[in-house]
Length: 118
Image (cartoon, rainbow, N blue to C red; front, side, top):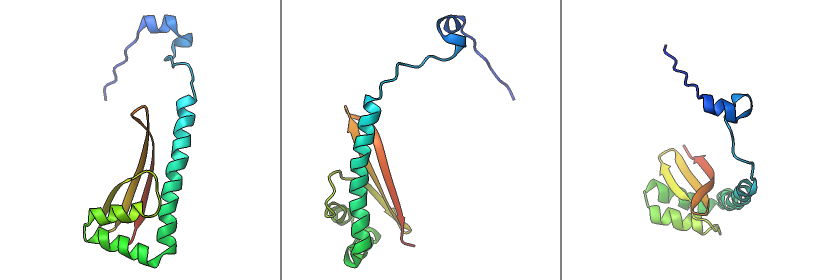
């Protein structure tokens, strides 16, 4: 095993104890991300409740996924009343929904649900 250590004398002079400097803490984006994540969780919760409480909905969603009918899968997920459309993938074992939101065109948060049916 080989290890390579680089030492920057200038870095040590400009930081206490030679530690890597971090930018000033600004929690505004962090709080915004949390706020948006809560909204994504609410959307995911709407879909989960619909699956849980409606036999016909859960059956139709599974059948559409098993037939690889992406358009119908997306329509069914949207019909649960969600605000943000997730990226949906599925395979013979189950379905994955990736809910994503953005701040200033940068991804800030993801809520990923993976449900098995086999």
